Image (tube, rainbow, N blue to C red; front, side, top):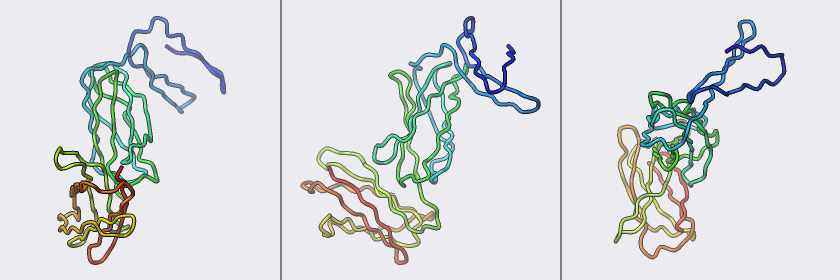
Length: 228
C-alpha cells in the first residue's frame, strides 16, 4: 500500500483489515529511504523461549545481538541487567512466522561495570536468560570482577571471582572493612590469562562491604562485594 505524505507531517495508518503479522513501513524521497518494522495483533505467551548471543564476552559500549527461537509471531521483552541486579535496558521485540527472534539488539553501556551481566527474554509467563561477561580493555591490565554465586546447604552462600589479563600466578586477598585479611588464595591463570574461582563465605561473616585485592607479580587490581 502506498501513501503520499507531506514533508514534516504526521500520517496515521488505518490498520483495519490487516492480518496479524510483521510489517515494514518505508518512507522514501528520491533515492533516500527510511524504514521501520511494526507488528499487528501479536500476543505474548510464546511457549518455550531459547536465546543466545553471538559471543560470550563484551566490552563497554559494544552492541549485543540476541538470537533465539520462540513460538511464531509472538511479542517478547528483552532486558539487560548488570552484576548488581540493576536493570539497564528494556526492549520490546518479536518472533517471525518461523519463530526466529527479530530485532534483538542491545548495547552494553559505555560506563558498564565489569562482571557477569544477564540478558532475559520474557513473553507472558515464559522466559529464558543467558549470562555474558563484560570486561575492560586489555590495556588496562589486571582486572578482577565478582558476582553472586550459588548457595549450597551446609556450605552457605558463595561468590564467583574472575580475574583477567593475568601474566603469572595470582594472589587473591579477601579483606574486611577494617582491613583484616580473611583469606589468601593463589591460582595460576589459564593460557588466556584468566582465573575463575568460587569462594564460599564463611559462616558467621559479619554483614558489610569487603574488598578483593589481586596481584600477579607485576600488576594489582581490586574490587568490592557486599555480604547482606
